[in-house]
Image (cartoon, rainbow, N blue to C red; front, side):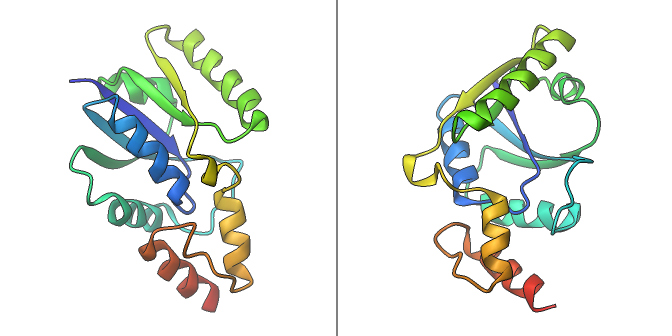
Length: 159
């Protein structure tokens, strides 16, 4: 069974993330979407909230697992017996950072492959940061995120 790890902060999960997931499912038998701890980010949603939102947003995909991990990604890939890391690329600015990460991961474990995937062009501008900002001003985010995420954003921004 070919397993891929799709790591991210997913704060929140967007339709762009789900588009990449659907593309990855065409290539792999199983995809583990894992919420990675990133000390450089200050997320709106807690890890548990992101876990529940991601589970709800992916429940229709039978070959998807949702998980949380902390530590080195290559070690997590190894423990899950995965063959690849999935990374979404929207623009050239994403590429430079993602290339550095992929090369470092390869240096740490040359068995681990990174697969770069581009979303549908309608999602190339979409980011979780933009969604959070629009939602904070009570803007309409329904075309950018699954309904469960839209509801969570509305609730979070009322408090």
